[in-house]
Length: 545
Image (cartoon, rainbow, N blue to C red):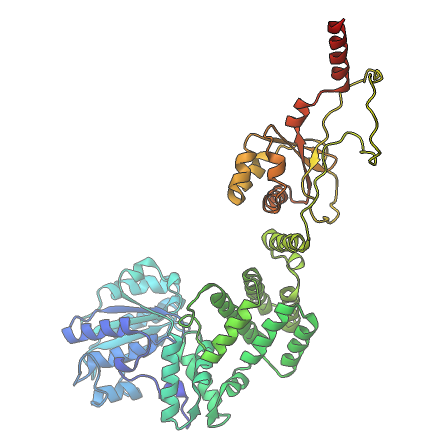
């Protein structure tokens, strides 16, 4: 009968275990020094070597000819444990033997001495599945077992174990196996099986396995069934994933906001029986690689791929903004959760693709991304202007067209007494690009949030913050009117840089685009009203008489 690769190539000693040197080194040291514990706890994700190390340890403590902490795998005890003929090593599945009665039977059996081996070893797999009563029944025996008994507990969910169990065991945490170690092991197995496996294909299998050696060998087994020459396309077909070509096509369509091509690609992959769950996972990993390439200079050690593929990743990352990449990752993560309970997985992925290709304002990337795009648009419009904006002077009445000069009259006609003194009109700052229509009007009055605007300016434009530090503001006719005694304020904010930062701060505080004007109070103080001019002339006439 054909034997699966993960069983055929299961490590026989600690030297063959990949990716767990911190575990194997400690266990070998204990065996060499004769400091064997009565209870061990192996924890970690699936396929990382917990059960394998438990079986190697059970052989090593009973081996007749151990060497450097490893079993010899040649004596009758090692061979008997390997083929299951020696019953002193008992492997129990706690998922199906999780009751109190099962643990009571185990306690009674533990009192008997081993028949052939030196130690009776109990390997309890998925120990977190035991009931509370079963855990309580195991406590006393686990704490003070007979001298000939060793317990090895294995679990993928350490948080479900009671603290009373954890405190009675030596704990070993199995890490996810690195893609480099998995790739090396796959190349070794392929060579021994006389199969041509390309390094890129082995690397792809390692990424799909996500740190589990058993999953990697199982996928390699499926690839073996498709032929003796295995490349990336073979792995993609066996795993039901899109492959790197389609992933780069997806990110290209996202960069171009090409809805049609993205949806056609989803339909094409779906018709080719591509697994939607795997495709979502691969897309998430692809955008993760783009994120790393966008933010890290030397990213070769953080992205597992070939050199050619790394160059493609860097090129694609340069075409996308970081905010867009992060948004795509969030969308794909949420889609992965939604797919699990979805009636139609394809529709969920299509909705995700639409969100990824949508512009920032409609895809919900948030105010910061939208503001960034608006500022970029403002900068582009300002750069396209051939000259700076013309600032109008404060004039209470529209200035008439210039006329030929006339000789001044000796005495001006007496002006009628005004009902109230004219107030100085505000001088407008450089005009902003036209804003979209806003819902609702802001009532006239004082601008209560002006202090918040100044706080923003302290971060964006410190010189402008200093000029405006003692200023106030009000709202009039839908504009923000700045009141300040500083005579240099008006000329200061006429520059493009300062006006943009001021507009940005007001937008972030108010949540809408506002026109900004300056009330030139300093100039208003120096100018006299017509009534005051008339009084001065009358006084001068009387003094001359």
